[in-house]
Image (cartoon, rainbow, N blue to C red; front, side, top):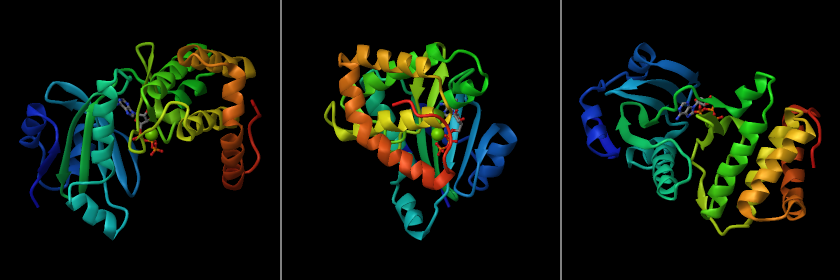
Length: 249
Ligand SMILES: Nc1ncnc2c1ncn2[C@@H]1O[C@H](COP(=O)(O)OP(=O)(O)OP(=O)(O)O)[C@@H](O)[C@H]1O
Ligand SMILES: [Mg+2]
């Protein structure tokens, strides 16, 4: 098996010379800090060629996906392409650096955000969340104004770093009209996640106020638009986890 560069510039092609042709997962475990590992992905942070990087090794879940990966397509490539498009619209996302086909899957490399914490882990610190929530709303509003929807805007995919919130996990991003259903689903997803964590209403209001300000839209219009998708997501959530948290809308 040879390594094939699917995306990226000079830095990425130089990186190819430093990665092993086999057992990249073991190499990542030895060289980087593993932050997530399951049967289908290995996620790590570490320094590669003088850059602090986020690495995600996508391993195929089933045969068809293996084929898709071999064709140089699939979730890693989508995540890379979406990041490039969003960055070009000045939407805060980690810079995409490389995407390559490797033994056992496809590797995505993006800029690693230093001292970053996702919103879910910030919440576990129990301090005030207003700065993070206002920044999250600003980033989601800029994504939506730019004509995109995230597709998986749960709290763990919003990364707080240097007083900004960066959007990560961009595989499901789609281009859409501002104000379309996919964008309301983003807000609904965020809201149901906030309800699940029993976020205080005042904090949620800070999020809503910041979103409305950056979208130039009224609070009542937002609440009306997210009502249906919130109901649907709550039902799904209840089936999965049972009744928990506290309603916000
Ligand atoms: N560019 C980045 N720089 C630093 N940390 C990051 C970056 N992107 C993601 N992370 C962190 O890495 C961890 C794993 O992220 P990842 O999105 O790959 O997995 P996940 O969110 O747990 O999985 P999933 O979203 O599929 O449920 C998260 O805690 C996130 O905070
Ligand atoms: Mg994630």
